[in-house]
Length: 315
Image (cartoon, rainbow, N blue to C red; front, side, top):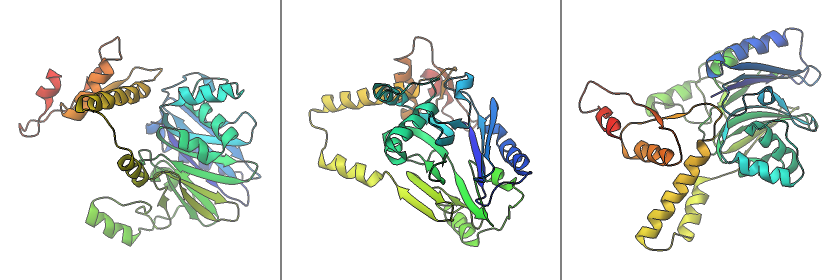
């Protein structure tokens, strides 16, 4: 899962900044029990923290915060890029040499060669990351297409706070816990707080499929790099041709390819299995690509009308 956090005080850091970052990072220990890292640039006023749950590249080469090969970019990253092997091959053909085999390093290399937006558009996965550009002195906060991974940010006085969870932001000494009454009303209406709001005044969620860029003078620019409506429109304009059997075969092949990419891991993996159509299909396609039995986990209920454990057991 991993957790990212940090802050940016353009006027510069003070002697307490390392301790501030440690407290913010420790608040996310449950997201990343395997490793912790910190990176600070006192003159630029930037502090980046990371808690790691090791999945790909368990070696020290996967440690974060991670600095790009040229030294221009520094990243703290949470998530997984499923097509990172293909992206890595592209970068290697362009002459890039890698130290390890983490998807974080591949993402950094793609950003360095192609730019932030082009690299993110080519990445298929679930992720949220903070990227500090030491050359332009800008901070990029980025979230995946569907918004699977969370990322919050906001200014408190002259300091920008950001993190995977609000509890990491609360650990900073500048924090002010003022409830956003409009967000509270939205919660009462919808049972959740819609993006870009959060429950606290002045704190926002990075919208899905967006790059939020913050400059030293305090300007904030949000750029949407992907839209579901565009995908739907292209699908309507170029529908699948062929018989029903051919369409079914195409869907199964694409599902298998996608699930195969998501099974890349240096640690054991499994699946949550409800016994319904979706999870049963995923587990079946996982098993078709695995030489070992797929480990599955199911939650059952005493109430017969809600219990799918027997169906999951049959699968």
